[in-house]
Length: 220
Image 1 (spheres, one colour):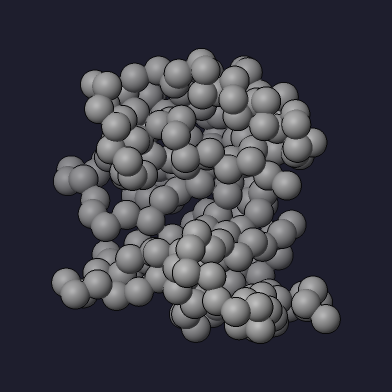
Image 2: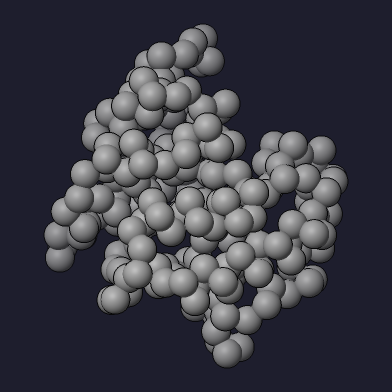
């Protein structure tokens, strides 16, 4: 079991709240977790809660804030921290680094692990018109702690929304295959946050992920 945070706001300009970090640390102890994870995102600013994971600008100033918050968090955690880049429906203008450069700088300066969500990689690449496999080739895959796999849907405006409520599309399964051809991660996890399908459909999704990764099915 790996506690997965959504409220630390590591990408915010404000320091992380000690009580939230303490709660995540307590969850790690109570569950006997080998690590915990959080998102490279912000969820609040100036006391206002967004209620959603929001992207941070890929700038050097943002890196400084994230690194500071990650280090504050790591200092209070009893286990390692893995960082997940989010799926975003927009990018801030005037980026100073590519996505890979941005992530590598944060990982190198914090010694954090990477929680790689291949559904996020697919969503971002589709919405930006870029190649998701090219990003895999630029990331330090040896630092991947584990992998998220999820489904989404196309919105009316043509953007792809990573919903965690739809079946995993074939394009994301293909990314799983491409990833595992390069380096097989320690574990893959199917994310479902609602609209849970009947058990046979869920088992079929798990089997499809296992087949794409080239590992033994666990549903028998």
